[in-house]
Image 1 (cartoon, one colour):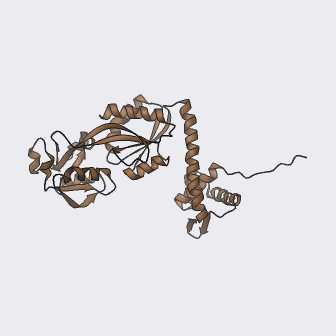
Image 2 (cartoon, rainbow, N blue to C red):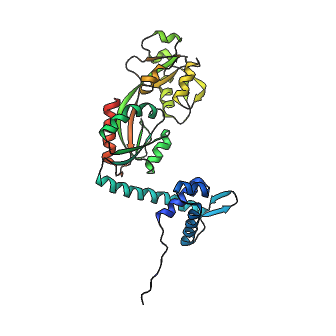
Image 3 (cartoon, rainbow, N blue to C red):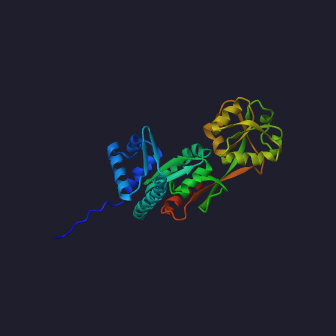
Length: 303
């Protein structure tokens, strides 16, 4: 007689359920995220606990929490799921290096202004490539590339990229945005020294553009305002309201963005202050050819 031993093996789907529950802290929301019923997700997680021989989840009325062991397992599970996705991506890339999904993250002061310009050309040049786009500030953006959640980051360089590969793409000059009735609006070009004692409006902490603007204007003795903005569009409205001046990157000052009512835009005289936009990705990525192709299109389009 042949003895058949049934072994409940660890599988990626169960780990996906656990990670989803850790993020949602709710069985129903986690089940919807995984496209399964709540009883299915709950049952599979119970089987996972039995297989591992340890409680992973604290089940309390109206509250879901992870045990200490659960937190450790979730951390490892995230890594395993990312590595599994890398394996799938490697297989897809070997079939068509310029096809499949490419997850790209952009800083908020770049994404809304660069994407409308490059998207049509990317579609024409790389028709089989599906771009999944995300916006994050610099530090969390880099962390997501390092962790494998994103394939590529488009950001201002230099940044602390934690050993990622980087590539410079284009330089972006700064322009001065001021109320249209401001005395400096009568000039065609400005010097940094012209901003002395002006009130400077900035983005909130976490935006690299804040630090870049401060670096430019500190040389002129510009006064930093007590309040800050969450986006360039908020800054634009604050300038139009006469609350101060700000610096805008070139792409955010061109086209329809430069036609905002109540605002005058003036360039700096050479050498103009600027920021360097570049790309960052993991050395171990399986999407190297697709990343290189995307970077080349951006270089040709945005420069």
